[in-house]
Every structure is written in C-alpha cells, then in structure tokens.
Length: 505
Image (cartoon, rainbow, N blue to C red; front, side, top):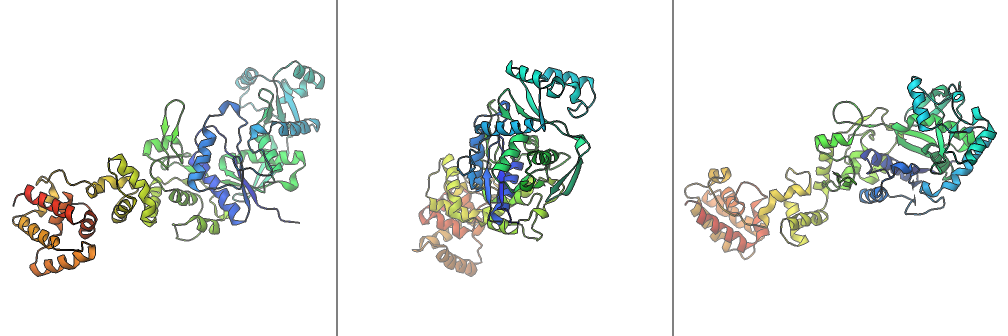
C-alpha cells in the first residue's frame, strides 16, 4: 500500500480573535507537516453565519504572518483543492447531503427551536436520537411525501445524521491511543440547515478533509467528543480507506485553579491570551503578544513546550529545532498549565540573544514616542549596553536609559545613591578626572580605560560611582567607559561640570 502524503490543515472560524490555544494547534500542525515534508492547508470554517465577526479573518492571517507560521495552500494562497473558504463551497456540500439522504443515512427534520426547547424542558437530559426521533417532526415520522410537501411549501428544515444505536465506535488517536465509544451516547447531529443553505461544522469538516486529501487531523481536545461522529460519517460515505489519523491535543489550563485558559485569566493576571491586540465592535480592546512587546520567536518556543517536550533539558529551541524534534506521540494527554511567567522568561532569553540591530527599530519607536530622535546605530548601541539588565521587553529599556539621550535635569543630595557617593573632596576628584578626560584625543572605551584605570591606581581614588552621579544623576546605567564613549567627550565634560557646580564641594 502506497503511503499517503502528509497533508494537515488548520481551519479556524472567523468568530473573533484567535485564542493562543488555537495558535498552538496551528504550530503543531506546522511542525508535523514540515518534519514529514508535507503540506499545511489554511481553511476558513465560516458555515455558522450567525457568529461571523468582520475583521476576524484578516486578524488571523496577520497573526500567523507575525508568528512566522506559513501555509502551503489555502485562503489567500490558492491551491488545487479550493475554494478554501467554506461559505464558498455551498454547492459542493449539497451533493453530499443528498447522498446521505438517498442512502437513508440522514433524514430531514422540521422541529422548530420552540418545539425543541419544550421537549428539553419536559424530558430530562433530552437527546435527539434513536430513542426520541420517533416523537419528533421529521421525515421518519411524517413520511417522504409529507416531507417533500413541507419543503416545497418553504418550511425551514435541517438534515440530521441518523445514528444507529448499539454500535461500538473506535477512534484511533495518535496521542490518546484507542478511544472506544458506544453510538448510543451520540445524538443525531444536524448536518445541514436550509435557513442559510450551509452545512454545519460536522459535515463540512468531513467533506473538506476528504476532498482535500487530509492525512492527519491535529486539533484541540475539545473536539474529541465529535471524533466518533466523524468516524461514523466516514463510514456512511464509504471513505474508511482515506480516513485521516486523529490527534487531539491537551487543553491549555489556567495558570491557577481549575479549568481551561480564558481571556478572564489574562485580564486578572496581566498577560495576553491573543497573539495580536484585538479591537472589538463594542469598543473593548484585548491585549496581544505583539503589542505587549513579545518577540514572535519567543512566543513560538513558549507555546511549543506547553503539552509537549523533546525529552531533553534543552528549552531554547528555534523553529528549525522544533521541526527536527517534534513528535506527536510525546504530547501529554493531560492539560498543560499556562505558565505565563515562563513566557516572560522566554522573551527575556530571546531579547538577550537577538542581535542589537534587529531590536533597534522597536526601540527607536519607543524613543520617538518620548520625543527622542536618533540613528539606528546609536539605538542599537544603547540596546547592547542595557539589554542584559533585568528587562523582559524592549519597552522596559526607556525608564532605565533615558540619560543616554537627556542630561539629568538636576543634581541633588536627596538622591540616595548621590548622598552615599558624593563626599567632601569628591568635587575636586571629579575636576581632576575631567582634566584627564579632556586630555584624551581618542575617547574610545579602550583609551579612557587605559588612562583612568592607571590614574585611579596611582592616586587611590575610586572615581566610578561619583562619575556615574555626574553623567546619570543616580545609580543606574552601564559601564562608565561605555557610557562616556557613547555620550562623547563634550557631553561627558559638560555633565561633569554641571554636577560639580550643583553639588556641594
């Protein structure tokens, strides 16, 4: 038997911003496909017209662009199996609805929402299935002739899948092994609605996966209950030979307490649950990883290790590393606790290891927002001097390094660091240091260090903390020689004279 080409899909619904759990699902599909030399399909499942949110599809596309998760075919890309937006595939689905009806695997039902609600109120744990369908208004109780008359009269209807009781259904799951379910617990799911001439998720999903030759379905644990139904649908169509392999990923759990991760957890604890900032139609704004200052590589690395690990102690893994090491069988069956503090750690590690020039544009935006205009070269130099400090985001740099661009507004003994390091005689020592610096033609770090270190050793003076007071105004900043070299001789000497004049001699 010829081995099937690996083809997987990520198929979000445009009902709002993409949850970070969905991003992880897309990432795992990406890693699985790339490891096997396969293809990743981007499909939009927009059959539920009542939940459609304008702008959601564009948001999802932009999120993946930022994260670096690319697709081989699908919406916005094209391919040989299109269209890839389900609302554009109506005519395709009708054919398969008719096939199920003609074979007796499905039936038409006319029950109104009011009738269904009344039944739920009168029958405890009501389920539309083999035991109750005979009490409802459907093709099985009304007959084919009456059914046709009602359809022609324009009465709204749905098509339900006819689940036969007493059948054992086995779902083969790569992560969870064999999952066995009796068909009695399944209801006769709605597959198609005449109100909008669209199929439900269950039918569209199966038909699309079959026609697009999807070999593996990797999706969240929340879809596991629907897997037995999908197995039955594959059997009903006679597609068992092309049924994809399933893998249901563990849920992302709250950082504390019980239950799955929600937006409320992010709001409560101060971290994003969406890749990009989302602006709701009601004016609400939800924070995003991009706008919060996370690097996309850090987000990818962090998400990859939520529910899967390579079996080693290595934590910093590039996308290439992840592709090489990824193994669905090593995914956990239990939910993964969303450790947002670890996410901050990942971002810091990536900041430290990202070239300064790559971080400079983001830092320049922050500088410009504070009225500072400088070159990319000087911005990169500041990033290089300061990123090893205790920061998690580029935005954390500004309050730590404003002195690179603006001189202290005042020098005062009220500052604790100044009071500790500016003593009697310090002003005279700073005047002597200024004379040494003024005599330098080469103001590089190396030149300063050679002269000042020798002078300090010969005199016993330790000038570095008082010098920091002169240039910074308090006890923060990088190596003093690096700072002075960045400021240049003129600005360094100007600040020193200002401090000497302002502070007591």
